Length: 277
Image 1 (cartoon, rainbow, N blue to C red):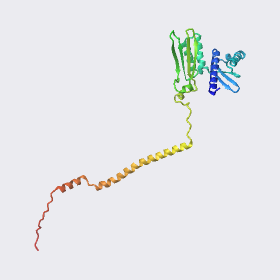
Image 2: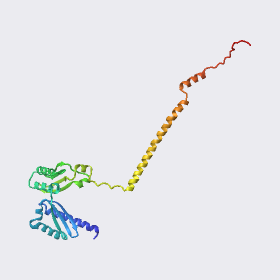
Image 3: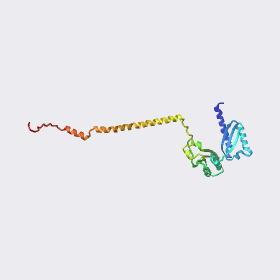
């Protein structure tokens, strides 16, 4: 048998076991079911709001389930453990089953949904959304949502912080679908919005940090030199200006010189009278 085929068959068997247990424990209020393979056999963990009903009188229910798993699914030494759910309001499956049970008892769907929302938010949850779909008000099927608080609908974060569960309620008019999505109180709204729960990025090694610091210093020195060169040139220009102004004649003097050069020049010789010697 190929390795891929073996793992596919094992996963399919685990899924069938989970569905069998969910069907058998539908009336006792189970929350989560884990099926793990160990060196000693197959370990089954059942989290329930009513562990006494799961165990049965003197363990009769557990014995029947163990026998069925051996005979029907050929599991080696199945070991069933039952754990109680401490806070059912933070378990989406338990609350979905509670709403479905209320609908099957004939309670109006809005009353059942609002009661569950109030119960979950009163326990301290960050948010909850309950969706009921089917023939809830007449022959035509429709869906209604009941929401309170903060709920994530997109992104990878919703798989980490949102509890999601779906069950069916069987009524005379037809089957109603009940979906409960809630955010437990250990996840704060601010942490969810800004993704504080994401893993921190690994720090760079010391050599990379030293190279980065050296590059930053070199860039700073180059920028300082580039700023110093224009300042020195500006100072040299300012020093050269007074000398050029001293050598260069003013506009007024130049104009007078031009006027003088344009006048006609006459040389007159006169005799100066004096005593003859």
